[in-house]
Amino acid sequence: MRPDVELRLPVDPAFVSVLRATAVSIAARLNFTIDDIEDLRMAVSEASALLLPHATADGELLAAFHTSPDRIEVRISVPTSGTVTPPAAEEDFAWQVLSALTTHAELHSGEGWSSATFTVHSTATV
Picture (cartoon, rainbow, N blue to C red):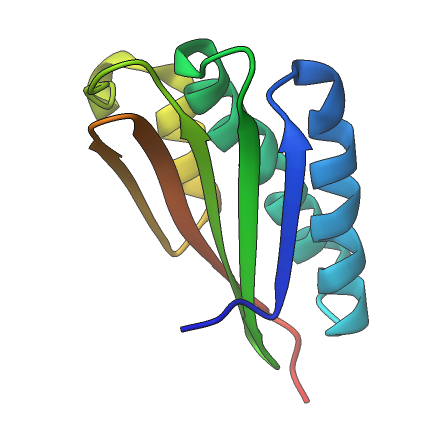
């Protein structure tokens, strides 16, 4: 399924702020609550913290946003050298925070890439 918004950035922690700003803008357009927007912003930060240490320096971070009126699904992917095993949930603080902030979160890895997919639902009542 083609994302509603796709963003390609250099693999550099300095660009995580651009990724967060994009996520916040999308959520605001969907009329998410301020708390939901903050949860999404923090989830993007934590997913980035999980992925960037394993990314190859010369690659691109790819973020795909799938939206509906009451949810945003985000997939952040980075290129890696070899296969990276996602951290165990009980061992990684960033994973625990990401899991707590989202309604669904998964880490995936393959030969040459690693990604985090997560969903944040709006709690706004219509």
